[in-house]
Image 1 (cartoon, rainbow, N blue to C red):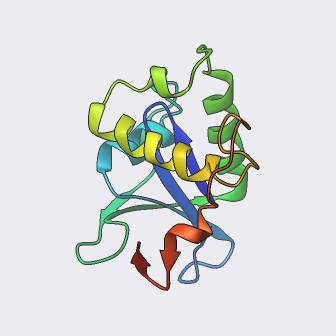
Image 2: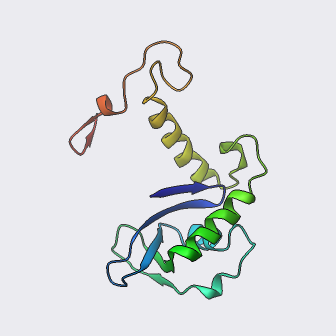
Length: 131
């Protein structure tokens, strides 16, 4: 599962090294801390964050499903914006989110606004090569 919040992007998968736990991963440590703290509502020292250089997600923390439910609920309750992309303070991250928004918009017939004809996101890729 991928989750994008105003404070960052995380990926959540089953932790195969620790049965019964989920692995919350991020490419930036501050994104992981922001998510785990539910945007400052929780203390992240409750979670050991490990650095894994050379892995697809450099920063990782193991949590139970119950902890993830609480963290996710608090992240949802922290929403105070009417435009997600505008709520992002980090310019580099905002650019990435805008790219994802554009790519996902091509899944909708007619593009992100449903007007006109646009190619699907699938049409822009051939194997692992971006066309």
